[in-house]
Amino acid sequence: MSTTSNLRILVAGGGIAGNAVALQLLRAGIDTTVVERAATPRPGGQAVDLRSASKEVAERMGLMPGVRKLQLDERGWIYVNEQGTQYAELPVHMFDGNGPAADIEISRGDLNQVLLDLIAETDGPLDYRYGDWIEQLEQDARGVDVTFASGRTERYDLVIAADGVHSATRRMIFGPEEEFATHLGGYMAFFSIPTPADAKEGWLTGCNIPGAMFAIRPDRDPATSKAILTVRRDHDPALHRDPAAQRQFIRDTYAGAGWKASTILEAMDDTPDFYFDQLARIDVANLSKGRVTLLGDAGYCGSPLTGMGTAMAFVGAYLLAGEIAATPADIAGAQTRYQEKLTPFLEGAKELPGGGVKFMLPAGKFGLAAARFNMRILTSKVMLPLSKKLFEPKTKDYALPNY
Image (tube, one colour):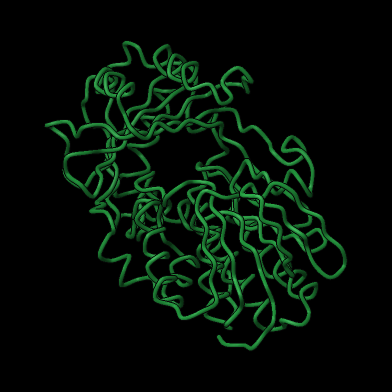
């Protein structure tokens, strides 16, 4: 992909979506600025996977050598009860890499670093700024005037908002978050903990209790693991941006839950990377408004429950950069084609497996017992052909354009 252009494009957000689109724009010779609110790249984070079209995008973009070096030793999922007794096992190969665990898993921070390393190797017109963000946008038919927190004011032909579920850029141009966010009935937290001595190498181990689940997933560093907590709960504004309230909510939910709950709770207060947020879906009907376009979670988030967040970010970034490079003199046309080509992928990628939180986290003891029984049946040899069909990605027939 190569082009000659006088375009200046601003990318808001230095996460996976923002860096993926920036990499492809730079390769097309397009003047690209990236602003990231954090002072440095954010390390670690939850594991993300590459499957279906996102794996194809990663291969086309040349990410796979770096990914292979940093990918997790992911062998599958184990389900245990409150006493720690195993009742089901889902190896990666059981569903051909399409089950809960994919054959390529990598921490969010490591995947982002692979992108940053390739950006650093690319000889393109780049201005990358940490510790800065957009304060104000003023657009007309020909471009956008941007005022930054640093006090700088600059003009761009296009602004790409890749600043996440709670996108400040989206709020400025498209409207308040409440217009686009749907609470899916739960909350999710994850953070680093010391790896338990009896952890099974390479396996995520999880335990369901009524209305909640908690799991431990190994990191690339054997000394640490990620605690993953998912809870059924109606939307509670009191939990928003209040870490103390969030931690208390977790303590109340998992106190006396058995298995490794006490180990996780003991590590929670001292963990360096506590993360907590609602499970929410983001739907924006029109991804572009004037000279501002939404990318990744800012425009289309199915929540972590779908397991397709990275896939949507990668596919969206690949399409948007490809369309811009194809017609640099026609930004509006590129924006339209980006949405048209991405929409069929999003329709499948946003679907919640099994009907959502209520199915995944049954509230009562009877529902929990039924869920455990169903899991044993689904992973049996007799039911495996049917189970494979249930786990087939909804996006398997999506044809990724070539640029």
